[in-house]
Length: 175
Image 1 (cartoon, one colour):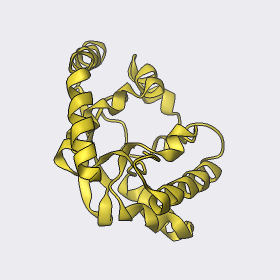
Image 2: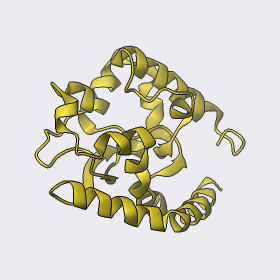
Image 3: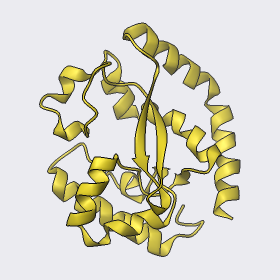
Image 4: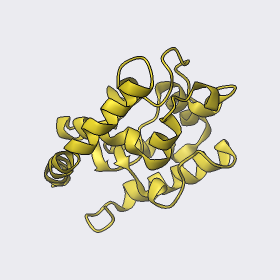
């Protein structure tokens, strides 16, 4: 039932956002060298690795690390990168993954492999995340736990608690 919900909502949103997606893609290409999309390997349901696209907010050649691990993340941002991240417009191409069945509209945000490996060993409830498809947005993000403010470890613990609550209590109402 959730898959049908994701397909209907994902397709509807993708059609509604088609024109903004084209504008963002053109803006990325006009303001920096390189492709409009950045593809990243992420950990999904049952620890399956999948390729997730984002509009490129960082310069070509930026190390493939979580942003908080970069020495000076702002030095790598493209001219519109900060805006794309703050507005979450960089996430729009992920509707491709929703339509492919690798992601849901709502679920725990997918992490990079290195981040996933790190937190699996540190946080007990972390493995619950792999029981569902990752989402474009999740309970943690809706509650303001985006991971880009405050202590990263504290934020991650709060996000994992929200993700565990979501997995254990999933319903259409919660979505």
